[in-house]
Amino acid sequence: MTVIDKIAWIRLEDGAILSSRSRGKDVYYIPGGKREPGESDMATLTREIREELSVSIAVDTAEHVGTFDAQAHGHPDGTIVRMTCYSADYQGTLQPASEIEEIVWLTHADRHRVSPVDQIIFDHLHQTARLR
Image (cartoon, rainbow, N blue to C red; front, side, top):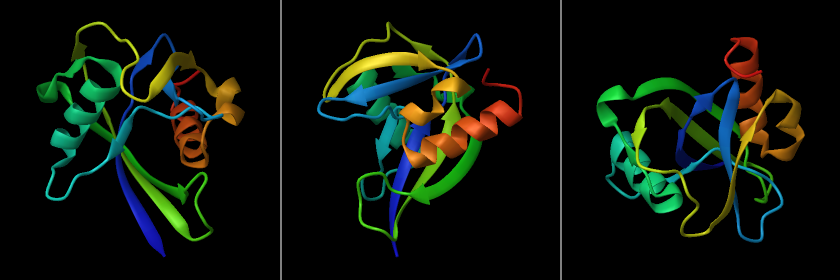
């Protein structure tokens, strides 16, 4: 089994979650990305969000939301993505950058539009009344 180690930013506003779509992709993903060797969760989170969404994460406000595993979208069977998720405040104006083509706010009704691991996260947030 191969595990892809990713850190993700859970940003909820008015019961909707911030999601992004990379160029050439047909599904949305919770913003974040893969850890570089030796990088901490917070270092990964701040780097990825700055690269993808042009904002700075307020590390002192970060809270662990959960860690979720699922079959990695677009990878061979047995490739698991492990998403360690944090909520946090931010400074700046959200705008797509790098490989990100679009950012959107999604609700649980949109779960069919996201990757398998994000579907698990959407279900968790919906069951805990954070995602409408």
